[in-house]
Amino acid sequence: RLNLTGCWREDKEASDSLDPLLQAMGVNWMGRKIVLALSILSRMTHTATDLTIADESSVGTVSTTIPLSGEVITTSSSDGTSHMSISVEPAAVVVKAVMDGDKGTSYDRRSLRDVD
Image 1 (tube, rainbow, N blue to C red):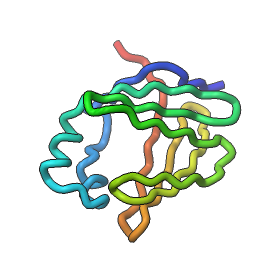
Image 2: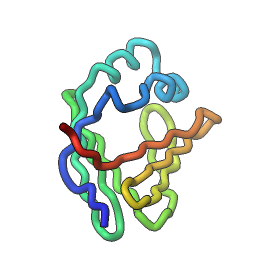
Image 3: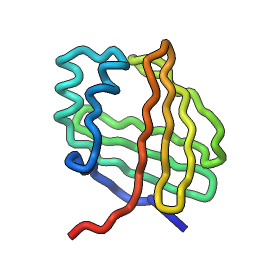
Image 4: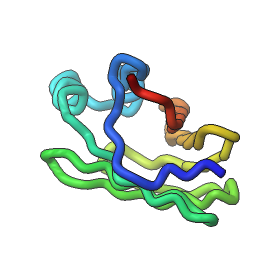
């Protein structure tokens, strides 16, 4: 069974840019550049019922707990409101966030892979 508990860093070369998402959220040019330059450490706790993701950077920590049941949760921040749900695949967990105000939908796919 997949378990993503642990500390993770984004592989920026294997990841899509967050810039289009940040633009859709209404983040200004300077704010996007700051976010894109941050080094983020994700501390995940994966249990039988939920996934907690605590994203830590030099500007603080944002923590979200999402039930694995597929139940939609609502989160709010200065950038607006998102409705988040999660699905579990054999080798990955996919977090779907739908932003209010026709700002779009994002998919955050977290998986394990071998690193040479």
